[in-house]
Length: 129
Image (cartoon, rainbow, N blue to C red; front, side):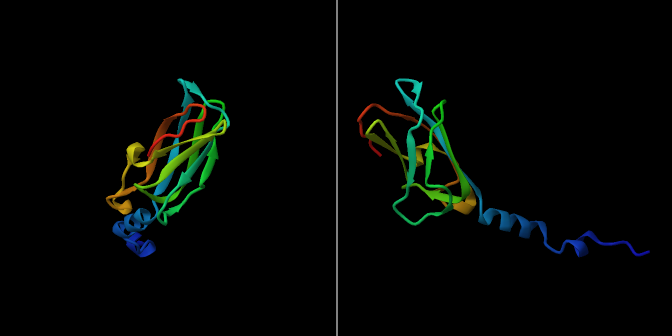
């Protein structure tokens, strides 16, 4: 009986597997929406990116009773993306760059794979980028 070579069964090298994995990094955009320190339920959170995104991710989420929201997908966000929170007839916008907690080489210097934001809102206020 001839021994079977692992390399023969799996011709891809580790380098090839890592290169493939880095093409499509997991993308997470999540956080909390608060008003005066209290959770805001049913706020609409929209991801707005002025340039074409290298990502496949839902563009909107709604906060739960804890004020939490999450959007999961694949790809990278550019630093000029915004999170727009709509609640009680008002809107607040914050840039994702300040909340980027994960940068991968596959995303380039101005790309982000993990955004975790805590966004404070007030009734009828409009925040800045």
